[in-house]
Length: 375
Image 1 (tube, rainbow, N blue to C red):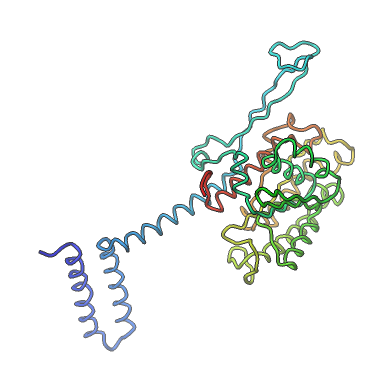
Image 2: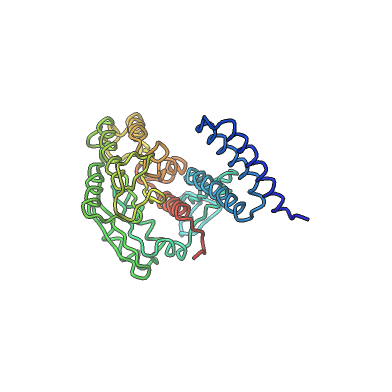
């Protein structure tokens, strides 16, 4: 008695060769039609034989699983900024202790607690706040570059605070916060190098891209953002959009060929289309009444902020609009944390930048196909 595979093969031969022989007899004068019919029949037989050959079935299943994984990866990347806030008042008594019963000498502090949304799709991505060991493992041996204005400097502070202990952070803060200056550090125990590049204007970022390309050396992780200085000192959204478009072209020129990005060919470097690790640090929400100078309140108004936001969208620099950079949505984080999270309407409490850093780290986990605790 024939087994399942033998029966399948016999049936395939009958289905394939009998019709092809008949077709060859009647269609010998039309080779194109003959071969088209043969191809169609062959494919049909292949579909019917697949269940009888485990290796073929496994291959098809593995392809399907890769597609599902990629779809989940894309979905989670799009959801990584979905953070919610719980800002709670806390009464501080005159002796410096927490108190539930306030009096005239007491003050109020605010606890800023954040986490990812409990929305079903977001919850399915398993985003996590990483501990020091996880961050060290993830960034082990990496070259990280953060470029921009004071917002970018605050990102550096939050990232380093996840890697270094409190004592060492106290030792470096003076150098890190020297006004309008670059900063670099090597964390020897994990072989990580971090550079902060003072780049308050978009043209500074474009020049940095040019230097990377000329030197043919590229960081593993690049975070950049600029706009506040341009808004204050140039105050022209059209000029800002042109500068962003030029930056986009420079960033794309660093990447290997990608039809989506429209580049012309491969470029040597550690950055890849599959896992670019390129991030854009969005501008914070500005609270006009809290800005600390009249010039800022006049020029950095809500109308101008939204005009600059539109310029960013139109430049197609961000991945969500067809560009190469993934947004770290400081606008959303600062807006949802609210006025209790800032003293000058522009620079926000550390919790906002901490959340942005964890968003970045979770995006790196997704793009590098890693999980916490994996090796």
